[in-house]
Image 1 (tube, rainbow over the protein chains, first blue to last red):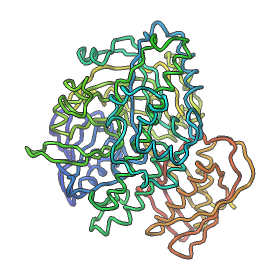
Image 2 (image 1 turned 90 degrees about the vertical axis):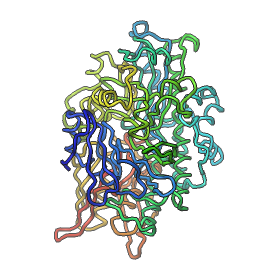
Image 3 (image 1 turned 180 degrees about the vertical axis):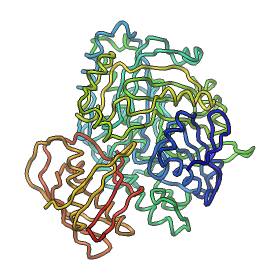
Length: 479
Length: 136
């Protein structure tokens, strides 16, 4: 697909052709487009544009790369009355997301102790696939409570405080979750994985604030240069993966019954108001609640690990959640499109909500600023904190990018890195890394990802999010 | 038991694998080997075990993907190091028997699922061939 029309410096359009109901819109610059064009993700953006009920555009964020059905970095807003719901627009890792917490620690004061802290984190936080940890295998009733109450369940068990919920999207739980719509197999996959990080690109990181771009927002978030931050990336683990797989089958066999023809069976979908659609929504929300509980526990485990690693008091550490957001999710939101107020089901797959100032969904402490947008990068370069904007509300249904996006295959990364010691290379750059899987560090080497600064730059220049701060990783654990 | 081959192909974000074998059962055995080797790094092995399972779908490719997801579930959740796959495909639902040793240590890596995206399974003059994208 090469017929992109340049709309502005960082916005390109895929014209409406064939079965597309709306055009595609790609947020990128020339540098990112070169890689984007080399994959099939633009075709995926066009495929999403064929789905019934899609409003406005099929969007691609600057970190777009090839996914299943929807591309990773894809956004589609479906009319809540007449539109469809698609598990392929959420992804396997339902409510995969990121949280960012601040500390009172200064990098220069703990620089020499970071290896101790990372070792403490690695010993405390269950990583990898078969890891077991702080939370014993959940019984049926406990799991039902997790699926219903989300992060509040974790807080009730001593993992964090009520104020953490205020700074978590949806308060850490969807209200209309349906635990009964989650299969026994999904429950089995997830019952021993609560409070575990998972493998692949999931991580817990210590970061240092390197640069402030928006002093007022940074002040309000409590950030300053040289400060140590904690970023966590994880999701709903095997439970969410299984829910997605289960409902791809259910919806896949129902799609034709509703007269919907698809260019890709991974886009299996049904009308939102159908019984199958409602059941998937209930299961997706339950999985999302599991993920919020998971990140809440992981954050507190990280806090405890830092306290132990440094031998300091909670008061000295001054740990506090800035924000937790989902980047694989569908949410029902009110938006104004072409002057008309409407309710839409916004599918964000590898994309984050980026609401501008004034929206009631934003925590009161930040409401006049805009929603914090968390943009994690690779383990060698940087991550960003940004804020959502009114422009994002007007252009992208309040959506923005979610990360760097891979640019090198895992097999190529292993081939190219087989004679390298990634941990030692990062150590030379004063980044301490520990990982459960021997090949994980090769697969996750910094060069395997696009430079997240390019992605943040496009978001900033296009105005769909504004840069607040750049952080550099100094301690990383991976599954 | 093993009669097929597999090759891991380049994919920017995930895991794309090509399987070839003289039979469909061979394809599934090749898949079991590929997935086991990807997920586990020298696991400590326990006693032999066997599980019965099924694979369903609206067509043969759908049932093949379903069978791969059954193998993944056995490998990752039940910690069964699947070395043998027997399949009975007399009806619209395939009956599977998965066998191997139990893993006494956890998997080193994770696969979320076998996907339907941009994949195929076909029987040709030289045998069976399939390509599948796995979400990692």
